[in-house]
Length: 342
Image (cartoon, rainbow, N blue to C red; front, side, top):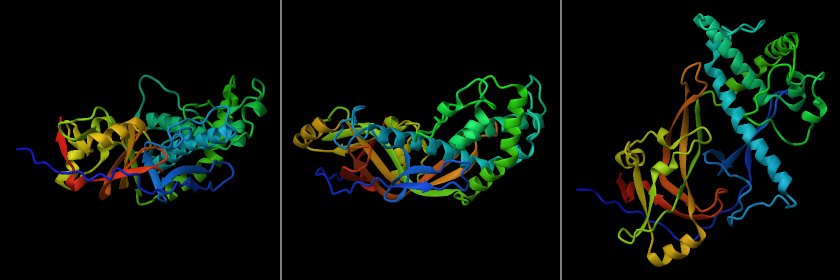
């Protein structure tokens, strides 16, 4: 027999102060960018992020709006900052790989490579990613622009925008000779890599971070039989900043329902009258969990992916109607929720 648990949801909009505060990680050197990351209640925000362009009422910031470029630059900085923080956090797990790296010559990739050479080649690719992710505009110009082929002043102008994470430039810039490429690589490795290693190792040395995990889901179709909306956890498997829903490490049977291997659903109880009015204004809602994140290493030195997990600090799931997390519409107690598995 299935055990039925109950959700208590306050439908009235609860008071919530809008906070635009972000946590700034000041660069230890002008060679690198400083990072600005979104927070909630003064703790880092993981998972789904505020898209900046979506207002609390669901409308969008128009490209003709007076503050459009200000918002666009803020979004650019946030994307670059999230990517840069991940690159910095990986550094502590790459000491062995960096120690095997050739710092004077490029390691050529071949069909058959010894382990040391493979580590050296892989480390050099990771250093290239680090340089692209964290270098200031002046350093990007220095290491990744070929003045003989490109208008470096125009490409790397100080305009408030940041290098896009997917934009990985090659050493020396477009059309650079092998001499220019090697000169750029060795200069970065000898001058700046030690500073980045020190900065990365100084961040969260215990490999734990207190924060909030944010997931989003659709209301879907109202269930008259069950008196509410079923929120499906498989919709919450978005691949966003640092953490993912399935990385939750449950501490009790109630929490285990959230990460059931077959998928589960949580009932958002609501009367038909209130549901009709609510659904007219909200189709997407955001679930917020108070958590502690754990950084557990890398998948392996070739798969440049952090291994992470998280645990809950509170049994309360806070529900918001906007991605800025300013319009709180209720709470769900995990210990008393109605849930079912697929």
